[in-house]
Image (tube, rainbow, N blue to C red):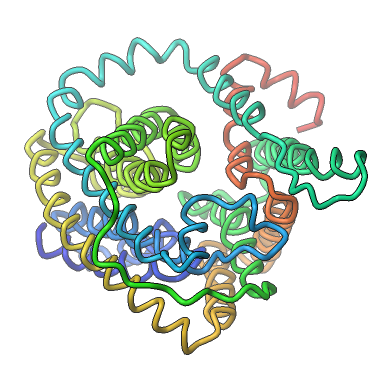
Length: 440
């Protein structure tokens, strides 16, 4: 399990350096290969392999999001703190802050093990009847927190008003059309069921990966020269406040259905960003670690039903946890791999900066775009030409929706309404009348 974890850590770390590519896509391909070739991957090696991949992704995927998401001049006043660090030449420092947040989150997970094992299952049982209104409150929070972000560049009063509220309108529109897309896809046969756990890949590649790489390809914003700092200006109070908010946001996302790390990160950011940018950046690293690694580790508590996320869903197809000792063993392995991943992420940040100084990052994004489009076809090519056409049609529609928040300065997390809206409607009992109204 330890050796397979190291292999997974390497795979997850390397592929996480490609902008817009998700570790779940690579894990899905590995599982498809495993199903097609029984015995190619030993059953006892699979948990460590998948855990290593998700740990590598939690640490290293911060690098492309920092250095390959340079805003243009029209958006420079509304960027996130991590991008502010990068645009001021301090992207490496932001990578260190995120890494520190991830390490602190690992420590928090180990300290919280008694709570996770003995209390969290009961907490989830108590909350299960209230999931509908909790998720509805999350959706309402996404709407209410989409605050106007005008840049005061418009000359007239009506122009400033429209400029300030365009992102709110774009956020609401993104949420509405994403939710409609989710309802249609979950209640129709547009995408073949043979794709199984990879069936929603075209949706997420379209909503998140393609808009990011297209923005990089057409962007004229250069990556500023970066300074390699030897330390960070971080007090214990700032560090613990950021990590605490991130851990709570990540734990919320890891526990509640269809609440993703992006939503958890948003909650963590609101809990910490009012103080300073350092707390915010630390919280994002902590949130991502808890959401991806914590949610997967909970899968290995037999009978708890706490496992959540794409990695747990895919792994459950070919593996089921047998003893509680697996959870403790994997927790220790995750801690050791997290230390390695932290130092690799710093190396990767330095390497990325040096590469971008010599290679136009548009070429990197173009390669990633081609790879993402190839990945769309993998789960569907065996189902025939019609399935491939529909998969790419869904990808195209999703990409159009995903470009809305990018073009108008809204939050991309609004695209997660593709899962939130259908689930809330079904939990509320409104599913059948809504489907009848839509003719589905």
